[in-house]
Image (tube, rainbow, N blue to C red; front, side, top):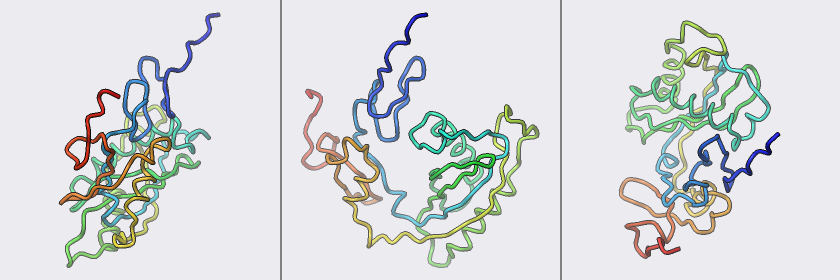
Length: 212
């Protein structure tokens, strides 16, 4: 039998036949570059931590590993599903999958929100998110091969982001690719927070890195 060609992907990238599937915030055909900009604006707002049980997908142990192909593919499908469900919730910013566990697939995830109006309770918004998730229409076919996810949302915890206590430099290092974290620094904009490098365009002090 012919030996498989070596995996050409770097920095945790996964070869999927014709291309490298890069981890978050990695770029390049071989995942050889850190992303020029990491947008952490959503981390500054309030968020709601939720749990859902997806009943028509099978759990495998490698899904616990956030860098595995199975975890990433499931997280992408789940995030797309939730974007569709929550898109009409006021202040909705996005979903981040925190962890996956057995039974069928239990998803611990964070719903990130824009700063709330002063007359809006975060606890009220959290209950709204839970109700919207459980009222969402489910696929008619809930077999494991069906298109679409069948799920129930089971718990909720609301948290106001403690913006003054955040160390922006440390936040950048937490979200930057491990091998590149020392090159990133925080850059506040009028609308949020970016993590950038000296190669990021349109940032004070940046320089042209195309020559290497």
